[in-house]
Length: 503
Image (cartoon, rainbow, N blue to C red; front, side, top):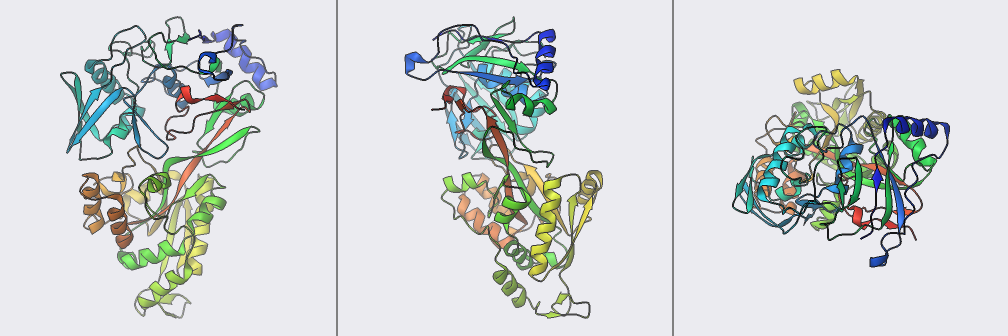
């Protein structure tokens, strides 16, 4: 395999390049003049330039930025990589046995870049670094411990989880090489990170990469990223639109559906104690239109709480994503809501369907979606008023239960666990009655005692919250490359060995 070198730019050169990018100059480090890579495997060679923050660590367990963490996939590998359909694919694991609250992993035969074999001790060391890192710790919150058992690693789970292998995506590094922000982690990736700040071919890797060269381009802040892509200083950029602001660079783009579930939370009190009323709300809302219009195409409508790609992999029915006002009206009519009171509100003689919809005023996507939802519900006979409040007020009111409806978003793990809704104290559990049969149905699903279809049937019966859509991020990239989108969106660069030259 040919040598590919990535030289991390010194601080002075980084500043000069950043100035050039802002000025519209396409200045960047010129890769060494060397023959095209990938010829041995018949691949067409290409060059990559990826962004990084020079003032942030390149040790994935200490990196504060998503950009720098993402680079770890170049020189490290996980136990499992999760596919775009949320199926786990073994990388450094040979197999895993899931039994109740333990997951026992047998390691594959693999070696670090220094030639040392990957051992159970290295995996436990990597897990401990991950649990000490804020980013990885939150993703591993349901995995409480890891220990060696001979040549195997036994992970302890907080609760049974048949999809626990999906959580083992943290980078595996050799023991003692990732203790602090300045440490140089030794991994098993297609590249190796050297002490002098270069990425070179990993002599122990059996994999190849078609990239002829990969150069790191220093950026000062996110404001410069789009400009750097458009003038050719970087090859690839991913925007998760987390602030609710949409922009589209002048480049090739692909929407990638993420694990961010947008939903309507319900109070579970008053008229919303009725699962039938909650179901009427479900039918009145147009999930597909919200994704296309309110979220400007940066989302995919969700008829069920599970990710659409996971639903397809489980052969679940596509379900309803378009509004069905007739069904909503029929449900309300059967509940006795078939006349209007003196105030013009639909009533069953005792109650009305008057309610408020709480939304975070600081997110444009959500505010737009809230008004669209209110319009749909009002057309179906509800009387919904949008309350758009600052983020702090929004969070405090939800925590205090001071809402009837609220528009929320929760980022799920790669196991797509819905525990934020069903666990006591879960981040999205406000208003959900834990005595509902759907809660025990979800516990049974996690334990493997029932399948996804049976859980979804229980969910649609109880409707503890209303799924709306899964948000998408936007991958923007050079016309010369074809990135890998075979993995779930948590991995910004996917499998670097699967990237190809476009055409």
